[in-house]
Amino acid sequence: MTADASDLGEWRDDDGVWFRRAARVIAADAEGRVLVMRGVDPAAHDHVWWITPGGGLEPDEDERSGAVRELYEESGIRLDPAELAGPVAARSARFSFDGRPYRQDEVLFFARVVDAGEELDTTGWTAVERASLTELRWCTADELDAVSEPIYPPALPSIVRGLLDRGWDGVARTVD
Image (cartoon, rainbow, N blue to C red; front, side, top):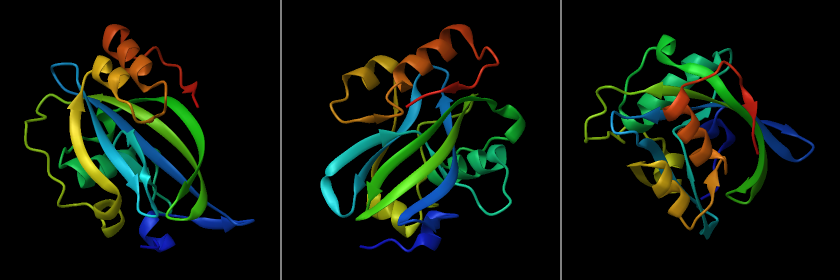
């Protein structure tokens, strides 16, 4: 499956590397678990990873609006942009997906989700998401530490612990 760039958001070809701006949500439930998704590269099924809900921003969409839109589309959880703290972190990721090189500049927001419920809704997944996401679940920071597959950002368990223990300190940290 070769993904059409329009399915991936606002991608622009720059010297052979596709680029987009993205926003993600570190959503924590009342039990201190965060919502993560397990991804797999359609072109390399042995390349798997875990990420928080989020994705590419629409043209002219602000980061907060994009983050809550993506959270809703990928999980069915509806938040107001004002419920987000942050951005708590920012990163620029370079990766290969479906046989193409990409760069994604993304910000991560934090939200406590009061009414998460046990039923997550994946009916809003795009064709690309249905081909590349295999699981959506709540995990503690300790469970994230125990995952054998890569987690992005790698500092996610530490970020989660800090946010749950102390809340957001007003600083957006740059992470790998």
